Amino acid sequence: MDDGKPSGPRTKWWSRPSTDRDRPAGPEEDGAAATGVADASGTASAGPGGTTGPTAGERLPHTTPDGDYTPAPPAAEPHVHRTQPLHAPDEYSTPPYGGPGPWAPAPPVQRPVATPAHGTPVPPPYAGTDGHGTAAPPVAAAPAQGGQEHHTDPWPPPHTVPQQHPVPQPPGQTPQQTSQWMRYDPWGAPRQPLSHPGPGQGVDDVRPRKARRGTVLVGAALLALLAGGIGGGVGAYVERNGGLTTVELPQSGRDAGGRAPDSVAGIAASALPGVVTLHVNGSAESGTGTGFVLDDRGHILTNNHVVAPAGSNGDITVTFSGGESAAAEIVGKDSGYDLAVVKVTGVSGLTPLPLGNSDNVRVGDPVVAIGAPFDLSNTVTSGIISAKERPITAGGEKGDGTDVSYVDALQTDAPINPGNSGGPLVDAEARVIGINSAIRAADSGSGLDGGQSGSIGLGFAIPINQGKRVAEELISTGKATHPVIGVTLDMEFTGDGAKVGGKAAGGASAVTEGGPADDAGIRSGDIITEVEGQRVHSGEELIVKIRAHRPGDRLGLVLTRGGKELSMTLTLGSASGT
Image 1 (cartoon, rainbow, N blue to C red):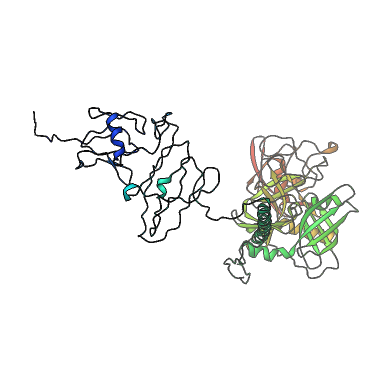
Image 2 (cartoon, rainbow, N blue to C red; image 1 turned 180 degrees about the vertical axis):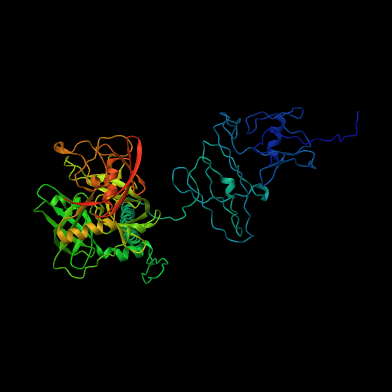
């Protein structure tokens, strides 16, 4: 029943293209079509009632230039004759004429080239090689029967190379060139000509290139060495000079150098020219100390323990702040006060230091200490007065008490170290108020600085009032006198105060007959507790307090006798020092 759809022949898609699908059938193929003769694909063509071949009224699909298949419109003629295949059936079914197989490469899409205008001569195309490296002759296309152009099969069998022969052309006609894509040979060598034909490269062509490469490497090495040398030179210059340019930092200009007279710098500038360093060498020992100039005659005051190593025949060298040196000799010394005077001769331009008054010193006053600690000349330190009338004893190395020093000292926190001994302790006006003599070390107690450790801020100086009196006596007589009261003290008494002994050496009375104490009424066994209103806690303190005065001075004493407290006054006597 007619359902309204066209009943004419329908366009069919084949599973694969046939080699003669786009050729019209010739008269000689009519019989083959009718009798079912095998076509070029190796399969039998069915008759009108079969399903393999095209039916009457149908046309083969048409191939576009891009290689796609499009259905052909129905032909007007009722019957189309097929031409005889150009190739014999392939009994091995080798692609592309047989069945598909993985061993046959698919041909690339070939595009036809434009045909030149009629009458234009065209050179024969490059035919490539015949598969053995031999160039093939140019191929001319033969016209098909009936005056139509006959195209060769684009897919020849892979195991054969089609032989093409030039076809004679009628007179007056130009041979038509067969398109190159029609002559694709998948088994032949590439048909593209060399871009730059010429002789091949051999060994002779490679050697110059190696030589050039070696020259380039040598040049690169020389360039690297040159760059390294330049870089090293620049780096060394930068390291030595701090950069490629001169760097100048801002800095204040030079001043006049003046300082306030009461500043440490001002005090040091004023006092240093009068300070000297002493180097003492004896037969058994040597030492270093400090001293200061007393007058323009060359007298220099220092400590007794500084010049003691020289003995009776040692050498003493004095070095001034400017570096000049001169020999010195001892004028006088006293171990009880730990003071000595030496003198230099033949030296001019000396700068004596002015002497102050130690009675005017107050605790907290600023002071400056000058000396040569550990032989470092012209060393300046500063501090304050920490205490006054500090009773200290030093020396006693002999064991008989003759070398013991009793000092009613000024205490200071100005750093004083071994080598500072004998140097001046000056006030804010650069006046000498004491002679640096002793330090208290953390490991060895109090004492003079021979062999002791460094300063811990506990330094002691002999008051200049006592030093002045002793120096004057040493310069005048070579000896110093000590004030005495004429008693022998019990140094083993452990109670509070200074106890008068029972007997003196040799069994004599502890109170010297006719002495200052005997005249004042002091007896053996009395305990003296005060001197001039100051408490006394030991025999050493009583000696220190007495030696702080001059012989002939009157002293007020407080003592206890049998539990009773008594007060009395006496006049100090005099004794020769050692």
